[in-house]
Length: 314
Image: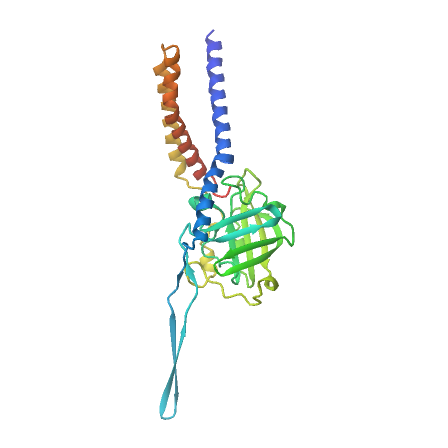
């Protein structure tokens, strides 16, 4: 009998673990999508109401002096830079990929909180339409999975980026898979290009799927895109791009927080079970009903922390 009792308890533990795993998977696939949908709605309202504003860089004045004979001539040239400084999490514009049904607002940054809202623009890469390599990352399976079908793109498919500066049409050139540490995919380019990154394969972060595209200047009507500037208003360059984080690792500290909330959820459920021992009838279920919201809240927070621990574009 002791063996039968032990096997029964082990079985209940395994069943509980399986149910919790299924709940976590369901939360990742569908629960996170609700958060992303709400964020996208708010971001679109910001764009529509023009509340997302850019801060132009301060004008720069260059003075040159030319001396000739008895006097000198001073020529002063004032150049106003149109580069903008974007705030982390701010809406940059929209990305549309008709071939796979993508139409999302792009935010600045690729942190955990940024990519929960939608595709994220790599800080330090040029803005859409400029010379250089525009970098955008997105989730593959969670938070709306904006880049879930990125592997289905073919050469020539169009990617349309729209910002306050206009609409820019890029044409897909190729797609390939790299290791997470291959940062060269975001290196500067002499022409106007676009690089999309996401995790590969689906439900894994062992590799990165890369899609590159080039600006269709015939469609944009701009044969010479403006010089590249990063999102802080300074010229973009290798030193800035080297600081970008294409590995997109999650927050390591989130695992500790997830463990804490898992213990909280476990203690709530254990305490409830102890309270109901010896209680029969409707009172038994009333205690469980009262504890369920607290347990569910702790479990959701635990799941959210686990998501933060996982790679941000999973």
